[in-house]
Amino acid sequence: MKFKILVSAFLSAIMLCFTPIVQAVAAEPYSIVSPLYEIATDAYGRLSITSSNASCTSSIQRSSAVKITAEQYLQKQRFLWIWTTYDDAEWTKTAYTNVIAMSNTKTGLSSGKYRLKTIFTLTDSNGKTETITVYSDTKSV
Image (cartoon, rainbow, N blue to C red; front, side):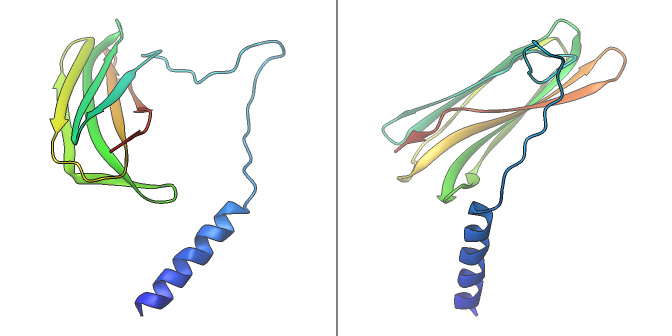
């Protein structure tokens, strides 16, 4: 039974590699195309690894936000492009202001590739929300 699952997963991965990727972008001529965030324009997430310890830092600031929630996930690469949360390394913080910064650590990392995924949810004074996901560069142990 496990063999069938492994073969199916392998064949699915191969099929995904040969699937054409289409990206649609709408823009006026001569303009620079970038995501349009109404509440925030930038976000920050950084992963630093020393020995087998990870330091995860995330922040965002936007003057029109009245509430910001940040969710950090330390992810490990499992197979090809599959990333999963490593050893329950996830943290959440909420601030009722226009800025949030959070820093967390995880010790005892096993060997492999890691990245930090941060999901920011910003709310303005009208109740409008916006979600921004930021990935750090990958680091290896």
